[in-house]
Image (cartoon, rainbow, N blue to C red; front, top):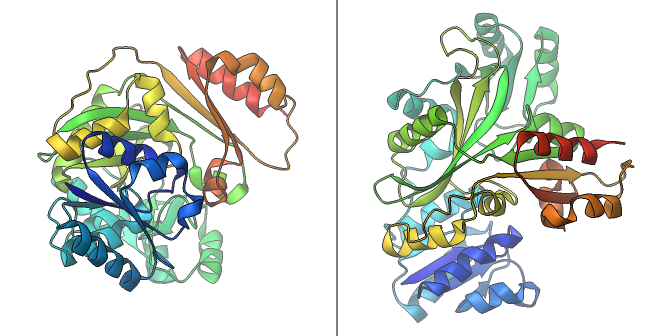
Length: 395
């Protein structure tokens, strides 16, 4: 099997996907814009060949790279980046090279457009907030008057929390239209609740081979926009209602043979027409693994190897790794450069070193959302989760 992995060096832990494919006998062919010399030794060892392009954003260059690898190694069976940013590139390449094992460009809109997603949530009978496209102030005001302030605005197509805002009143709405970036936006009624993810690896029939859930801060947009610390955690178990809605979402969208990251609100106040306190409401879908180091957090929380589970899905369309039964929480905390904390690095390591799963510096490309210095620990209870977060946050 020939597998082309787009940008296998970013995020930096993605070499694990390539390594797991290689273990399963796959011929792994990398395409990226980083020089070969800068690749980690682990990634170099997992790749059969690496083709450097000047820019992954230049489709013609990437097309020629795939054509070369196909000519040299034979027909390409799979092509994937596991990265939302390259989702459209991946899809177009599959179409152009007749690769039938993933999303193609004809289906990409329903996975990229936040407006298009609503149709599939409705198909799966998954509750979601009301939404409208807002090409101008008058349209936005009409929708805001309908659902009431505050509202939330975000690019119709976008990755992460960048350029997304809570709009508290008409004055703020006017200011938003004066300063917004020149891309299509949608507005949604504001949902008061916490953000949870349903993360899964699904097979060719949209059935989950692995499931996990993470609890995120109330607003990743606020963290990104205000430069706050970032902290979240992977749960020990997926809440049952969330599990059911996640599976229904995968079926409704027709997701097959991939890692997915679906986001949901868990209502903290009753919302007529949507649900009661504690109910889950669909937010958006992402056709890739959860961002940052979350796949590693899933491994730590569930004593598993999601990279290998994913590679087994690719090669044999089933899970070969048994569930461990040793499930617990895994907590992430990202600190900011330039902020003085009460407990320095040495004190943090002295207190939590025996439970530290990972500690590293965050790449600059991810630091706006995740912070600059990350700490990640194993935790056996919510008390331990909260204690760790409070200790790291103290200034």
